[in-house]
Length: 597
Image (cartoon, rainbow, N blue to C red):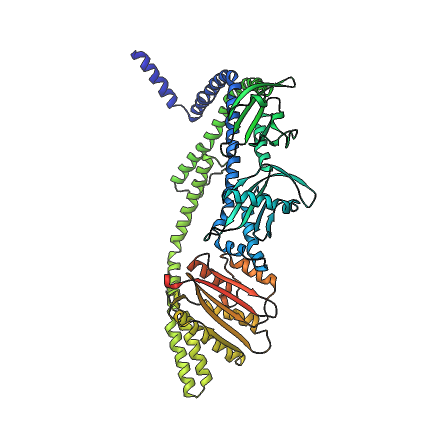
């Protein structure tokens, strides 16, 4: 016993003290070749015996899963049909007689409902006046839509607010194309009075069923079909029994219960018939699996397993030698380079050829040497950078108070010389700078923001001979509220430069403000030259993002204002532009109600 232990110990020490190349070869032999050979042999033995029974169970389980997907899809459509029950604004519009405003209000609702499920075909909303509002993903409106409305309405009324799933039906569209669809109908009731005000109808093409059936056929290499509770065949992958009756199938009488399977012979070919039933819809999926396909896979798998096992076993032995050489070569070279670095040579580099772990180690080795050289350089010029920093500190000593005091001195000298215009301009400019250059203060009040705007407009009127008139319609309770600084003046500046300056005659700017729930709105309008529709759409598209406008005039453009508002209040806030050529421009500024802050 002792001799055996000592012998095993010597063998272990011999392996441990051998080169890495030998160790890798041993690892490849034992961890790849031997397990692969044993696994292939054992797997084939069990696979050849149980393939047919396992395939039958697998298909049955897969059919159940696919029916669950179909159930979930129909359930989703039913849940989507309940959304109008919670849209009080839409309900109010739906209860009203036909109008342009009603059509505009319901169009985005129908569009959004149709886009929730990508496989939906059409969504119709019908009010009590039999007016139709719809969104289509087909190439036309179904031709029988008007004839179906009374039938749908009676079904929705009988269901008393619950969704109704209709059987599959053939429809023809106005384009002449035909399709098969199944329909979900639901009554829309007023959320307060529970009085019916219309109904919603979803049409879904059987193409969504076709996807499910195709998934099944890809697995079984056979064909499948689905029929509904009335035994009407909803879909047949071979298109031979579409819209037919399941009772006409030769094996219909053998399908009993909700699920099961049985052997079947059709046209001198053997099949395994597997079926399952949806618990929610009552629809039944039937899959016919060719036995020949199952046994063919078993034969092919046996032959391929033997060939692959032999090939991999020989290949692994050969490749292990090559791989061990490639793995140990760079490590040996890196070891030599490390000795040179230890001797003080910092200019050596490892040539990295591959992106494996050894290559990553070499890359970090090179980065480490480069960083060491950078640190040496940083230490060498640290004194120069320190002197430059001290010089910049001296240059930054001029602070805003110096600017205020200088402007005040200029104003007093202008008053002594009876130059009231220069005095007033200097005073207004000083007030603007004092408001703008206050460090560390992001917010002011609505009153201070308007006062800053009046100083700015005074200076512009001095330049343009009182061309601009400002009208404020801001309620008294809003004046004392906190507000983000420097957001009104850039908007007015944009109105002057791009609208009023180019207009002949006097320019008018009106600022209105009002509360709406938790939000405060400022509307800045002018009677300038306006903008084209394309320009307005482009601006509003930019304002939905946080992209800084580096080309803004004066450095603080509308896009910068929009960015500051979104960063301060949230992405739901910001600017919106409305304008027409020759009719002026309105900028709507949405802020969070500052009382709630």
